[in-house]
View 1 (cartoon, rainbow, N blue to C red):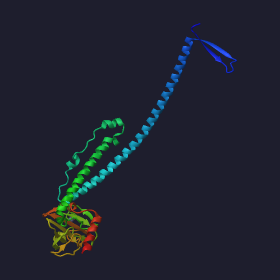
View 2 (view 1 turned 120 degrees about the horizontal axis):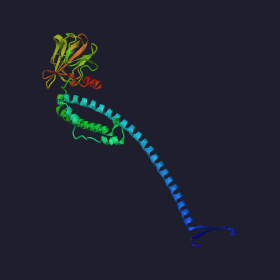
View 3 (view 1 turned 180 degrees about the vertical axis):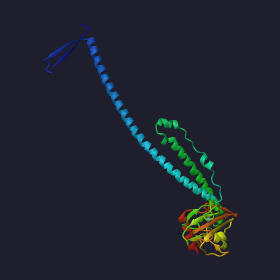
View 4 (view 1 turned 90 degrees about the vertical axis):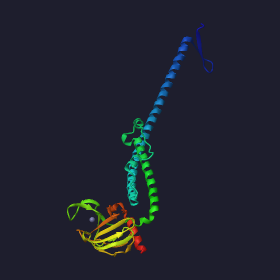
Length: 318
Ligand SMILES: [Zn+2]
């Protein structure tokens, strides 16, 4: 038979011989089935392995995502903290600018800034799946804002330094000290109902409360224009400083300077009292610039340690 193959098995010692007859078609189909089974097993194994690695990758990405989200949350909090600190710096900057006679930085300029970067890729954020609260573009916009504000402050500080260097001589005559180092501001500058007269009138200075006998210091270098009793002010000292500044210290228990005396910033000129139109020991403190009352808070520094240092420095140099 032509269309017939033979499979012959011979045992090792050649004692047994087995012979199988098999048609070519049968042989061909057997081999084909065998190959198909092998291929099927191979594919199944491969699919399983791919699934396994995809799953692992998903889990890894999930973990990464959680870490990223918490980092973003941290970043958001840090940015908020920095924003708060920048606000404090901005306020101090405005104060310094007032002291040095510079205009405050315009609010619009602060908001718009110069050459700021805008981040408009909220769509990407949506795709990335981060929630609105910690959206990357939002944080980046905040960072860009901080960058802008810091740049503004750096420019402002340079301007302040230049102005200070140019005006150094006149600085000694600016009322930059608090007249009562540890006193408490008890009444502000501006319109108010007078505590004794009980009607609305303009308060031309600030009231600083402290116990009777607390020292009152000259807030800038100057000359005593008047030290004596004057109506509602009670015992009062007027100091003339150069460059258009005058300061007034009212309701003193006593004064320790006389007319025409030259005083240094931080030098004691009197003590807290309740003379004149006053119902409790406090200092009525005025700053006048070219004859007009101005808010003393715009000129003195609130930093207690700095104030103490100036007073101590003045005392030790005497
Ligand atoms: Zn007052």
